[in-house]
Image 1: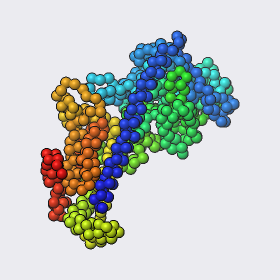
Image 2: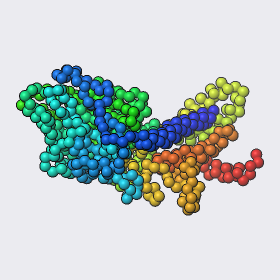
Image 3: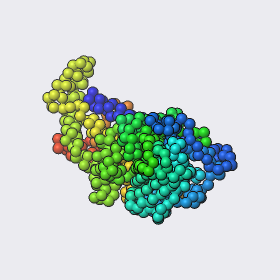
Length: 610
């Protein structure tokens, strides 16, 4: 009864993992591939349908209004959108179409478009598209008119007394050097027809944070009112696997409204979502490893929106409070813009040093951040010590084993005692074969006498599952594990093992279908799982025995498509468990069944007769 209970519980947990894998990994991956194909088809169709003409920009209908605006609640163009674009050009051609401020820091290279003072040309110096060191740099932002526009900008709305205000069409004047390096600043200015002077100072640190300081000097003879706004606009949906454990899309942490995550499909349905006014928070668009976010420093209202009339247009924007400025006076406002890689240490430093509200939520640690965050910190610390994330995973596995050793020790000790009293249990079953209640009573009496917990054998597996999923989350979402090598053929711990047993691990000159890519590490994991299960006596029931025989095979195929760093963890954990369980069994004088089970399995295959 006890062995059966543990067996069924183990089988149930295994089935649960397989179902979760199918639901959260395989299904979304197939959907993502279909969606990517649909997006590409729509993009090509949109390009064919585009008519001749210049790029236009117009206000989105239903733009929010600012209460208390002296101009009579005039609409604020906080949701400006680039209209239908004809004759899209290459990214480089779109960049060269306008004058620019050149960016070149330790982490970023690109430029700021003087038309609109848009940050629309950014590449990440330290990250490439593939593990090939000569592959292109990651392109984060691209200008309007290119194939995939994605940019950030700030502007103003004003009442009629102001006259013109700087927006997407404004061509700013540069005062001084038109170049930004680490810690540099660029000063821009623009004066409208009424003599109102707008000045903008753009500063860039050595990482990924821009600081925009805008000042408005009223040299007219009338009081004016201006309202600051900022937006991040993306005119395409990026290809992604849409895995449940990872969020990609429109994101923000907005005061009392808390964390807001709206994926691309949902915002297509909702069209527009406006949140309550707050004086703390940030908003932007996030990918798996990269993100852009605008951080207002004063009270604001945030909106997530979508337009699809002329192709995809996803946007997050904010509208600040209206500033009234008397003649001869001036006022200023400051905004921050993050555009770069979601490096954990960098994000945490920004959150702490700049006092950015909940900025660490930019990284999707998930519901179990209480496990995933410390686990990443441990891996990061170990990697700094040994210089290899793969080795860090191996060491972390040992440390996790040590933390849970007392519980595992009790579990394996209880299992060892159960093996020791196996003859007495068999005798009770035979003696009370026709009296199940009495059989249960005698079993419980035996457990109490020998101080055995019949459910203890399940604890090692139950402990391993949350750690497994937490490590999967860490390996999958953190940029630090992206393209992190191990040894030999493992050049990227966040990707599956690239080898396959079906072409003899690359010795035969042909590629195999994805479903048959069963690499070295998944095989090692399956072997160690097989050996671990053979540490215990074979289940007496033929069905249970068959399931136990096939379980390592199923898990081998299942984990072959997982990040190899996770497979390395599982294989190493199985190996440690084998030695730990063997040591405890020997200590309690219980026979280790491994070799007898292997010999018995070989004999059954050799002689299939009953």
